[in-house]
Length: 203
Length: 203
DNA sequence: TTATTTCTGGCCTAATCAGTCCATAAAAGG
DNA sequence: CCTTTTATGGACTGATTAGGCCAGAAATAA
Image 1: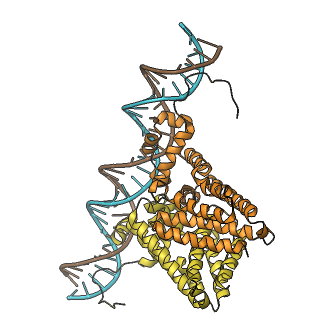
Image 2 (image 1 turned 90 degrees about the vertical axis):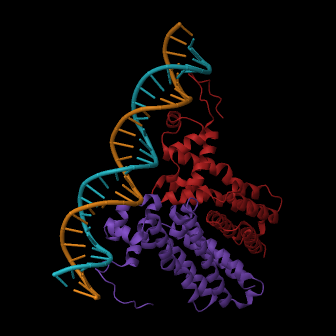
Image 3 (image 1 turned 180 degrees about the vertical axis):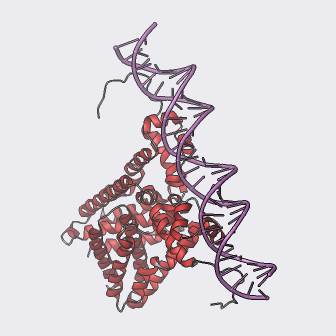
């Protein structure tokens, strides 16, 4: 992006994006209130002072974390769909990705945005707006990918409906995983649900 | 149930179920950590001492609140489906009920179980188990209602798949409402999604 | 060298909060 | 009347927490 001439003074000793990646894990596992500054700074590998210098405060960090998550981990299912060679493959890979995402590192924490972000949204309008925008973007990308893979469905608007169902499926996976729904049962449910969606796209 | 001979001593001055109903609103709006004892006892209309005498502690109360919610407000969509005269009506009423539930009292807080309960589940196994059981029961009741309304779909197992999609739709509504998704857009999305589900049940 | 910036680590504080305790009042049965 | 139970409200505790502050070290450009 901007090469930007070298800054004066001692350079930052850590990568912002890497620190955010570590913070993701804490918020994801503990929730917003459960993630205390000690746990966060320890996971990020920085001191309290560096923390406040770089991220202003906890709620500011949380926003950055949500954004980072949405750009990386959270975007996997959509990306999987976009890069697939066919409609069937797109849905198959999407299904695998949403289950895997909800069980990242074999820990069933669901989705940071859908579970932690949404809960916090009720008391923090900025988080609400952010999560809303992430969901909208996700749904739009899915819709576009489906339009590309199933062009005949576009006239009926079936791709929009299917995109909405895909988002619902993703969110449902997140919730169910977080409360301990068995992963194998989830895999087969998702498969069956996506088969129904595929059928709706191609008749 | 049990008539149970009159207790000795001064009778309780409030209804447990009514107190729970008031507590529902606080947890729903503030989340688990955001709901402090002052706000809870004030809403419930009881003193701190009465609170601890009746509910042991905050997390115990939260469980009772989740259960109460699931039996009352949260059961509305399923009940609407069960009492409908036809498949089409069942799905229509279910759709209306899930959107209304997510906007109870015109406040878009989503679902107490799916949003607040699921977030807390990661750090409280008892809540996780409780929410899981509530979701399972809900899905079973929907499955049974659909089997009743669409008997021809049962052989293919389509009613199970549809029930799973209905649950996903309900959870998705909850999340979207909580983050500020416009209600009108939600109504039309839900309608379209349920039309797809209905079609899958009847072809 | 000097100025500038970020680093660390720890200490402090001001607030919040769950849970306990107590003294007293009120409502019921025996 | 006495016992039992729940009621009230306020005060208190102990723990946790976000955030601020400071002093000294380290790393870079000018």
